[in-house]
Image (cartoon, rainbow, N blue to C red; front, side):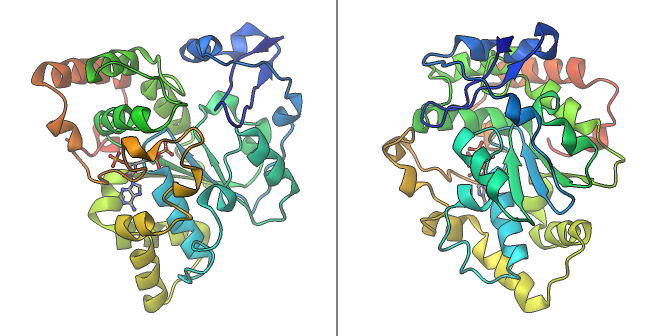
Length: 303
Ligand SMILES: Nc1ncnc2c1ncn2[C@@H]1O[C@H](COP(=O)(O)OS(=O)(=O)O)[C@@H](OP(=O)(O)O)[C@H]1O
């Protein structure tokens, strides 16, 4: 029996797997994480996804919370009462966090569920159920930069001395949730399934309305024009910064330290250009070409 993961120190979840072969190399670093506590969670593997579940699936720092806010507002047809009264992590709990997992199990459907896990660590019922998966991806250079700043705010992230150190760890997959390249390719293997929708942060940013329409179509929902306007208004980054149920001020002082930066930082595409050197960007691009060779370039519509 091999225990491989503790998510966060304040809400420890550990998954146990029967054989080492079930553990991808890129996740092994998690075993070394300080404060690591083994805890048997075979039950997790038996979690039953239901057909009316909607799973937001992201590599960390790809726009997860934005998507949850949008899905919450679609559910209420733009009425902000729910998002303004229930914390974002209770509206769409992370399946890999133990206390949230337990809440999810007890929850009546339809459920919003979130995960940052790579595909091989999701309970198997996901792949036989009709639960819908929204896989949001983002330019990994922006993901990298966002993660660097977030590491100063959230102690679950690897504490690093410099952006260069974070850069090297990111390319090696030696960061929370492992290699972006493998995580992304893994989930992209669901392309073509009716229950899978892949979206880009950049597309959501460039044309939020059309992307929300696409989400509604995928979910079989319709919004009246004024309901759509309300979804747009209340899921804007400024509205989320002003919403204490979404800005993590309720978590400040736990493993979040908002003195070191806001939870909702810039919320733009292309911020990597302000932080990565030309040499870093070139090294990144070489790695990208190598790792993602064979996938159509239109899957990655960013510069
Ligand atoms: N409404 C809205 N509009 C635009 N951008 C937004 C929005 N909400 C969150 N964000 C940006 O998403 C980044 C955080 O991603 P995640 O929510 O996936 O982070 S986490 O891993 O779940 O902690 C983080 O990106 P950076 O600003 O580049 O750090 C957030 O600012």
